[in-house]
Length: 183
Image 1 (spheres, rainbow, N blue to C red):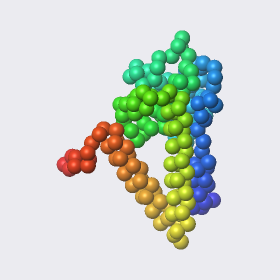
Image 2 (image 1 turned 180 degrees about the vertical axis):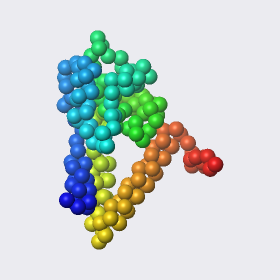
Image 3 (image 1 turned 90 degrees about the vertical axis):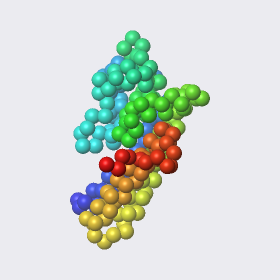
């Protein structure tokens, strides 16, 4: 399989990715190892390159930071899973304190279950849009290597600029402030 075909297949699979909604999460309380297993099963796209996106130590740290409610008798509920799915999906682009603030603000006016389902819908929609853009870009060039390179560049720039907007929005920075120290 050539690089374009492999990229097209990978993009197609990503465009079909779906997160479980809150009512699809286990309705029984889970122990830590079960939480890790459930999340790895559903968020397999986050483990590209074999990186661990969730470990028991991470869960414990999120609890200590107050981002996730403490477990009840070492058991985790749907509510815990909702928090963890959001945190794990966003932590590569938004700092942990900003994620905590974001969840805190959104859960002031609605339950975590609604926030989580809103998050799932937004995540899937943005992933589909990115996949559509990627498919279009791959079809525009006659040179497969150049097409993949342009796609990688575009997606990296898109990720970087989107991250700037997200973090700027969360931190309340105005447009006049420099994004970084020019040194």
